Length: 218
View 1 (cartoon, rainbow, N blue to C red):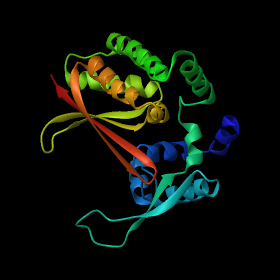
View 2: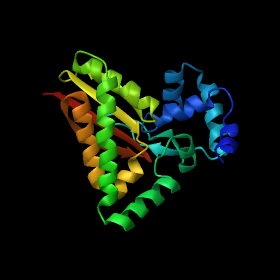
View 3: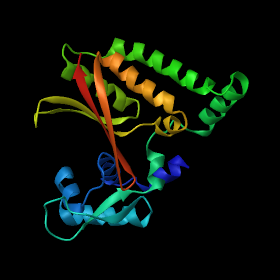
């Protein structure tokens, strides 16, 4: 199934468009053409083609507060596009967690996930490089991207200097929805790995999720 779907986007720029939109909360053709440094009409044609095969759809996005004009047309990914992004909540994982619950009790799956995250801390602490928080966060984001997490490290100055990790895809998201205690443990894992505290804020728009982790030096 994966290879069959992949052949449908084996054209120039299509995969880039999907990943660019995934790293957002929806984008207009104007925004896409600016990010991808392509012509408006070129991007529009690619988006139309992706919409025809069911990987993109559109909605009317309200203008930002204080801006004038009618809502603008923006593109977002459809659920069908999820196949191109890693998801650990597959049939095998679900079966394993269900078997663990049957064998060892109701909270056993969460204990297993937490044990996995504890092991992850040791891996990250060994591989994260840097002498300050920004360098460590940048290294952490690079490692996470290799693991299928779509995230970036941002160093903002407005209104105050802050180091952020902005996440657009988490392969464990559906597992965390079933086992909420594991989500809290993931945040603890990040804090131990980076040597800092962090606050988490999640925003969902048009089926896309943007999670902002603000890092706080201890």
